[in-house]
Image (cartoon, rainbow, N blue to C red; front, side):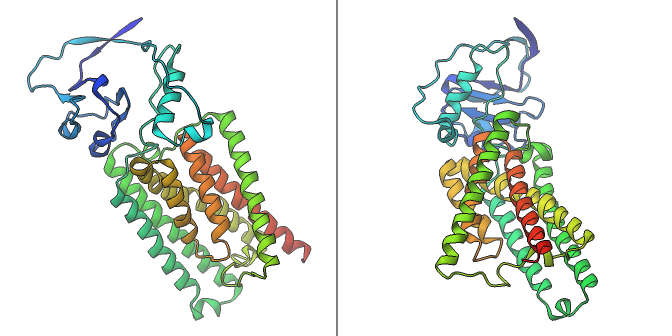
Length: 355
């Protein structure tokens, strides 16, 4: 079965592609995804600027000559049968490498009616190291400013209601500015907000099971860490680990604001920053394992809690692994929100019991 489509401004020679990814990084429209032996182009985004052809030293991409005829060509809907590389590692480890993802994608394409979109390219936009450093720097500056504001003597001297409003307003501005910066970067690429950060729909059942398993693992580690730390005499300072019940108060309004900021807004914005940009940029250049090991402690550090640094780093590892293995940011957002949700529920339950 075939379909007739108009020829495109690029000439592709997929057999010459070695999946180096240089063309992906220079594409201003995020229209390319490549792997060993394939090139995928989102033609509605491609304008034939030729930047990809300029950096390709394999002859896999070329630009059609200006004025050359664009005859119709035939594109088969059923892909050629490709022998997938032999699988020797468990799937959850294999998906952290580009070669492993290519093997899985080739195997899944065999026997399907249409070739799936290759998942060997970036999860979202092909973020540059400069963009990753910029968003982390903005997050750090905003975090320092937030702590400085909330720690001023004037704020501490306010009554409970005024202090709650100041904290809510400061957190709103904190997350709003980060979201504005991320939206601006996504708009510059012209690919849409959801596509830029990998907010695509994952496989529901397998992603749900993996998210639940990751949540159980993270919480088990956190409980074990707390027990060992207390046995060794490591106790968190009040300033280092403030109670969630005093953030906005323990009344109905306080609970509502805590849930909105800590369980919903916070995890979403932080995942856009740390996994949507930082992890993706590192993964494209150094591989999945290095990306996880670097992004996780940065994520923990920007929470400003020495006591929670180790469990938050472990959480960052789980969030990075979930993002790379599922090739979507949503499972990490759900895991982060669930982790914070358990924290909030436990804090208010303990406060209500008077422990």
